[in-house]
Length: 226
Image (cartoon, rainbow, N blue to C red; front, side, top):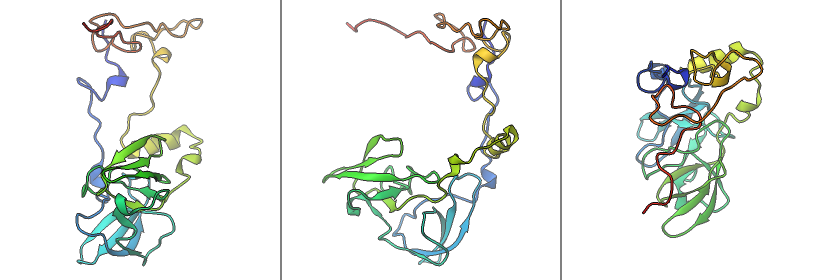
């Protein structure tokens, strides 16, 4: 019988978890024009794990950027520190890389993160991401040179469940996440109360309802395509 699983709470039929974006300071991205300005403040934003630079650009507009290590209030942001990947030497550390030219930056934005420019060709730039995966980018995609500030954030232990609770609540994330084998039989297909056999995990049957379609899900088809 299908059940309403907490693991599926973000899917259809469950409650919706919304990001508290009304408490965020704003978008942290490169402007569409040339990046040139002065850092006026360093702020903390609930929606970002890294601190943010408040930048006043040369055209008297203000915006936010992901903060980098080694900079402080009063320093200038120039086109040399934020430039296209084709202008950055191989082996340089970069962050906030654009997925497409002029989109403001999408990759490598977490606190303490950095990527590395590996190979440069005429029509593509290969970058080593923090996940150790290599990704190709358009040469005109911009990136900031350096390392994101706020490093060591994940090294500090939470120590108490309450600290973890409030940290997850700030981002409105579903927590705690309980394994199916630790739940009761009425709450999850893998749950039971027998201590000698903690889980009855088995492949989901064919045509299983959403509440039963968990764990080892059967493939839609097998064998070589003819």
